Amino acid sequence: MKTTPFTGKHIALGAKMHEFAGYNMPIEYSGIIDEHLTVCHGVGVFDVSHMGEFWVKGPHALDFIQQVTSNNAAVLTPGKVQYTCFPNETGGIVDDLLVYGYEPEKYLLVVNAANIEKDWNWCVSHNAVGAELENASDRMAQLAVQGPKALPALQKLTSLDLSEIPYYHFCVGEFAGVPEVIVSNTGYTGAGGFELYFYPEDADRIWNAVFEAGAEFGIKPIGLGARDTLRLEMGFCLYGNDIDDTTSPIEAGLGWITKFVEGKNFTNRAALEKQKAEGVSRKLVGFEMIDRGIPRQGYKLVDAEGNEIGHVTSGTMSPTRKIGIGLGYVQTAFAKPGTEIYLDNRGRKLKAQVVKPPFRK
Image (cartoon, rainbow, N blue to C red):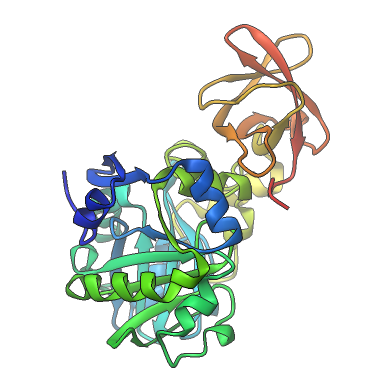
């Protein structure tokens, strides 16, 4: 298995380790519920160094991004971040990603760890405009410091005014004595906080500084288990569960990152534009359990008569709501919030209700 610059620290701290996307990653430390609530109310630190990072540079950088991504990157000015996806030729999604507008001819793409090789090959094979591409995934480390206490903790370590970085924006500057750190007001938890990008050789220094600065706020290391429950409470999609090569962004409720602006001829635009105009037969929805039960990926969703209408893509017991919550695809007729649907739990029909995420208010 691959390691990150922090793998030794996770093991020394007693984390439960497991393979994820080819990496030896921490799944939990003190327990998923405790870690989840730490991030909701305080501050926690995720090692996300397994994520992939590609630089796109040169006079054709924007042309390339406009061609391979669904969102309109033309609106990205330096310091802004955009959520988007790579559409494939058959109506599905190669991956979802972030695009950082670094300079007018320089962008950073942040992709999912499990898809680094797949995404890199996709970008290289679809680079028809001659953009300069660089896979920097092995030369970049990343920590996500998340929670309402992240700002006062991290502000001790930099002269950058973190309160002046809007959501989905970033700055570059000295952090914990390390130059050229990317400090980004992004995250996958819905609890606020920042993501830090830096060279692997600075990993120890930044980790130690962050934990020292956060000590007064009860800072804790957080594993991938709580990262999943936190994103699910917000209704954020997880690639491989809620979106994949067979799900269109229109079906997945990602029409807001699929921009049909003039001059943007991205992959499979015509088919997706038709879907948006004519509608789709299924939609990704959020639902919460009325009966007691925990939805799990792959469980069937049925109507009152027991007819199959869809399936669960992600589900858990909500640590903050103490009820079962999930995401799943259902026939469009059952997608309206307030609609009663049923979870088929090994033959037991359990009542649920379609709701509009987030589940955590």
